[in-house]
Length: 176
Image 1 (spheres, rainbow, N blue to C red):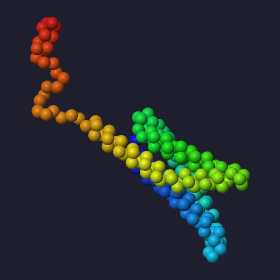
Image 2: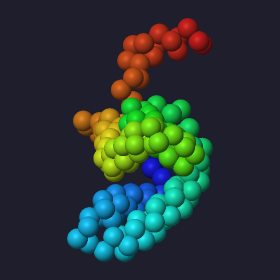
Image 3: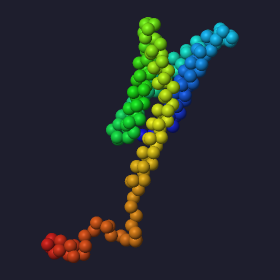
Image 4: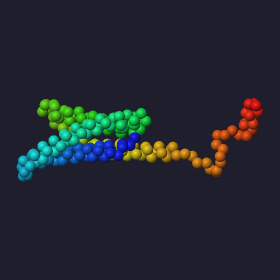
């Protein structure tokens, strides 16, 4: 169930931007606490990257919503690539839930834990997506090879399941 070209390009592009903005935010957030560096610049960079990450996440949610009927339902019905698909969907669900928690949960006790879970799973997204693509493409190749038509060993116009001449004579004599 390969995605159409433009949608695939948009999805991979926005997921790449989402990953990059999140990873760069982690770096900028760590750099702003160093005293030997310009902490104000890193503070501004972290704020900008976090805003970009949040905006990109909103676009990602729209694309994931479109992915359901375009890709997930069709592949599920066809029984294709379910294991890595389930892992992908579970990871996206966890990332959405932890993002919601980071934005709306005010508990200072829960926030570091939610942040750690969000970061750990967010950094794992490229590996999960890559695995899903590789498994999906390899199953397409395996299916194409097993469906390959059988060729006759010698040229013939009679199918291999055709009745023998004696059987044909018996059937024809009973009909007539």
